[in-house]
Length: 59
Image 1 (cartoon, one colour):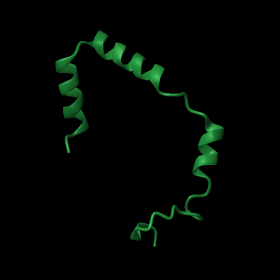
Image 2 (cartoon, helix red, strand yellow; image 1 turned 90 degrees about the vertical axis):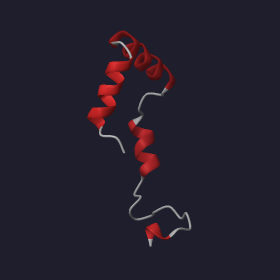
Image 3 (cartoon, helix red, strand yellow; image 1 turned 120 degrees about the vertical axis):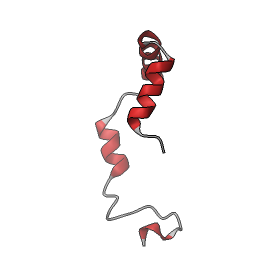
Image 4 (tube, rainbow, N blue to C red; image 1 turned 45 degrees about the horizontal axis):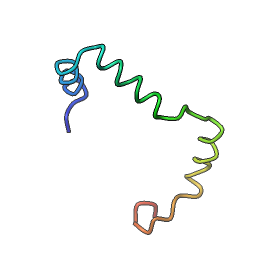
């Protein structure tokens, strides 16, 4: 896996700051804003009631 610094260096050497800002703005429009109430409902007490996916990771 690439180091984060290497990834950022590649991005900065490939696109301009203006292009990067435009891409981030586009992503911000696509991704819904965080909803703390939903997040707490979704996460719940996952340690006490882990998902039952059938694998051995929660046993």
